[in-house]
Amino acid sequence: MLALVAKALLSGALIAAIAEIGKRLPTVGALVASLPLVSVLGMILLWHGRPDAENMARHAEATFWYVLPSLPMFLLIPAMLRGGMPFWLCLSAGCALTLALYLLMAQFGPRLGIPL
Image 1: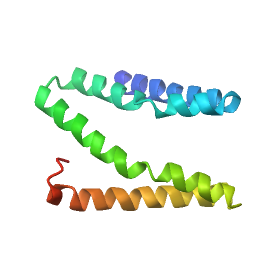
Image 2 (image 1 turned 180 degrees about the vertical axis):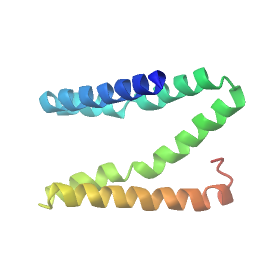
Image 3 (image 1 turned 30 degrees about the vertical axis):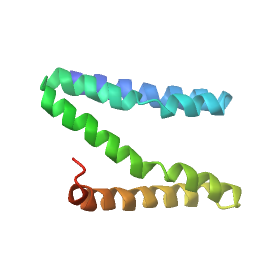
Image 4 (image 1 turned 90 degrees about the horizontal axis):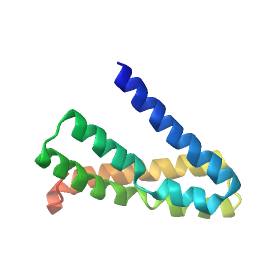
């Protein structure tokens, strides 16, 4: 239980740091947010809990394929914001688009030979 709390605190600290950096330097905050820190941290914790090379390889490869459907959100949100749409609507639309693309990836990825 203590390990789970430590993981949650570390993850929360990472998100808080990105938000604080983004307030002062939006581009640097975006750079830090775009780094695969959560993925790397997740892989370290996964390896610590289950040091299995094949499991880790599957995890890393699936992470690559699931990142792709999330990318259009980062184009939709600024386009909508610049068009005068409210932030919460833009964020909701971006999340809905990402969810729809994740579902499509999960449905069609394996059919196209993508290992998920």
